[in-house]
Image (cartoon, rainbow, N blue to C red):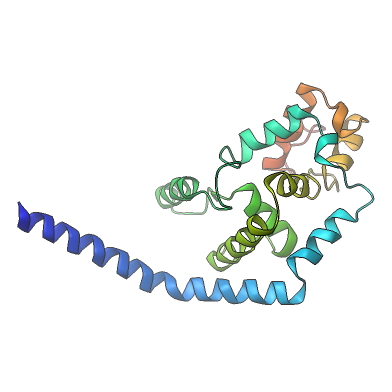
Length: 202
């Protein structure tokens, strides 16, 4: 039994070390991408760019139905993770392996904000790593409510609408705080694939 346990332990350690060796170049390139991004524009500068928009709206002025719907749909453990959700990452890796393609990202709201602030939407591992570094910085420097507020003000809703104020006005002619539960649900659904699903297409 001891021999089997030792063999299993060595196999596990060997697998972890091999994974680290294989992943190290990608992590390094992701770190370089992150450094280049924040050297071009500090995270605080990017945050102020979002906040300076004339359509920026405070979290308290967005309906509870929409806020809660976004968290439930996009990042159920948003209030509890540190910018990265290990459980979501493991689930995404499993599903991607089974599908043989990128079918699930496992990104948190914080990572999605990082992507919107700095990066394109190409599904490459280096970009995902860079996202993680930006997300960790966001979680260090800003509260959860601030991160959620920033995210809701820059996500794309289709038909050239960026941010919840533009989207609620464009699709329903109301302010974000006046969105009904049904309208909130439709806009939350739109976030998944705004070019295919928006309130004018559903």
